Length: 395
Image (tube, rainbow, N blue to C red; front, side, top):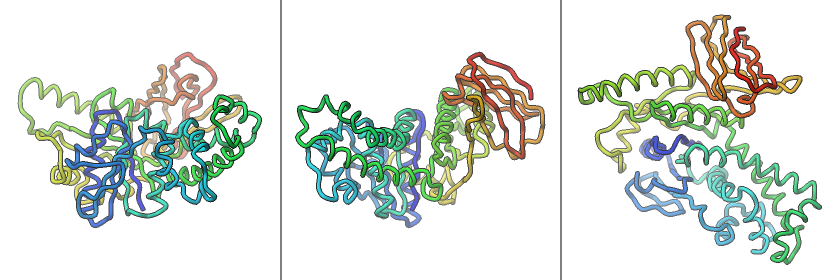
């Protein structure tokens, strides 16, 4: 069982790449589902077939689905019951409790994730390819298991607080908070299982889709940083819409190619050691199964696009003494001991010999001062202490 989730800035081509991956996977003989969690669905347009909120067979071994979380959970409680059958509803649950749960923070994201987990646990498909929403929404989606469990854990420990929290709904409560707490506890257990599936590198992989443009690269770096914070395994990067050498001549195209070459080098430096997949900029629209199949071959060649292309931590943040943090980044191919750091806001510029890297820091580090850096057994270790001013450090 493989779950592959494509994410990135809106408009970079996530839907197209996800659909192409699914088409190629199905052609290799694997029963494949491609599903969209984006509210502004475009998967049906990419496949050029009508879709619904349930899996629809669009070709041999290929199903597609546009997950709907727009409607109120209360109105679709029957579907949610199906997803968590035997978890929450072992002895039945009333619509009153369903209504209260629908107001719980993050329930719409949880429903989307339960769609994914349903396929993983029931093994209805060999591969599930997720066309995710733009980066910010997807990060919120992926952090919901931890956030939800934090809420549920606190509610379970402080029943008095729960009663107070549910007071705004008191006029609609007929059975009191006890049944709601029990349901939340069971959903918490299901969410723990979901979290384990999403962070298991043997099952799940996350791929960032980007274009060789500054703003897109920066958002992709943020995505990789946040995925690393939650131990979600990123296995590669897809660079979309690369101008071919045979593109039309002229000053405009020459300038675009030069600019792309600059950003392609930045991508090489900033995302190593992740494998990079390149997709050309096509003259025609990439719509329909034939065009998607061509894109998959241009991107992945003869390789199975659902393979695990990379395993290992891309970065790690650990707490140190005296309210500090240490950022650890694998750099197995760098040997110089001369580490230079320059921090500006949430940007960190790293120079080690001839190696240069610019990276976006997560918030917990962005508000701190970079104290020093050193290479230890192929690992760059950078210390951050409590401070807000920028700094230039040589270690």
